[in-house]
Image (cartoon, rainbow, N blue to C red; front, side):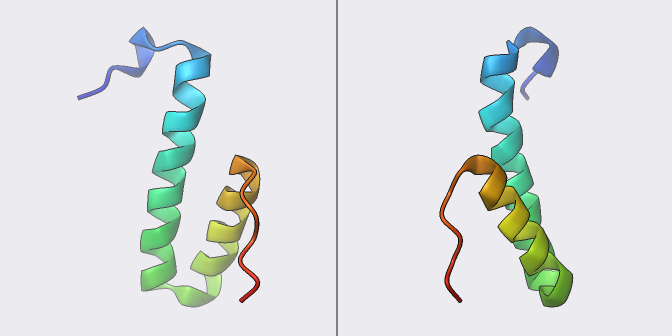
Length: 53
């Protein structure tokens, strides 16, 4: 288990964005209409190119 209190902000940001991405993928599978918008938002925050689909 990771203790976030022991990590610096620089270490936390990529980790938290990864967790958001995982949550967005699960949401997209469960609720495609809303999940896909959330997934696009998370990927935009990560600086990744948006899917053209």
